[in-house]
Image 1 (cartoon, rainbow, N blue to C red):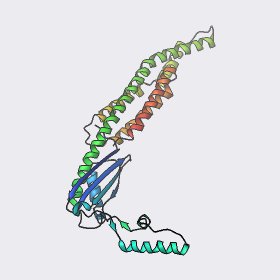
Image 2 (image 1 turned 180 degrees about the vertical axis):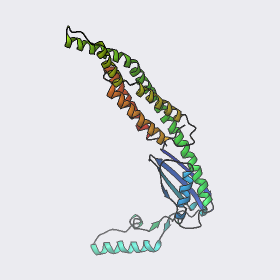
Image 3 (image 1 turned 90 degrees about the horizontal axis):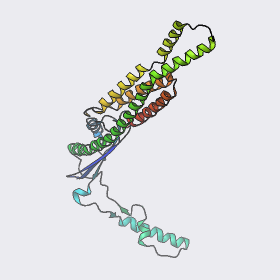
Image 4 (image 1 turned 30 degrees about the vertical axis):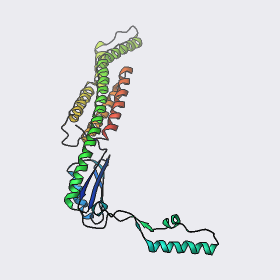
Length: 296
């Protein structure tokens, strides 16, 4: 089982001082990178929140937002009217109209647009402190949702990776089937060229055999095919893991090795059919690389 590095989760809980809400978002990153926003006065918990995250997440950029709606505790969450500021605004606008000779009455909507006439209560800095255990428990619930999201995304990733591996297996079958015939064809071509050059003179069969043996060694791609199939098997084994550890980096290393073998097969091809199969190998390996970048 693999997990995606992209996910989202949230959780809420009612506590004595209000309603606590935790939201967690993750996107791709080579390492575990955190960005944590806590209610005012609780910045000292940054390191503890980071520690709680590390117990559940291994890679990705993690954004955590912890907020507190204190209106949930006392019900005093309605906007407040500052009458003194409203009276001051009224006098300002009336004097302005008088000075500039502007005819018209100052209405409520004009005064309401004046800064701080109608204020929303500060729900984050007033009242008691948020208990540490409440933040930990609510964060754990949000992480449960996040991990579930990442696992579902990981299942889709795995299906795609398995499909790419099947395409690679098919291309390797083509290369493996064509390789012996390619060598025979090259041997016959070489013999024809030698016959043309020597015309009626006798051909040194031993020398010709040595040349063909040298070409066979130079163009042999059996080792690359065996290693490539080994990499595919290792990737499938990794995809079948129990999910207890992050495997994204391991998959990236496997893809790097696949890319090396695909390039070598293409360089040694010297055959149209094998060359086409090598292009397919490179295309599928590149698609694997792009998808593996999303794996935790």
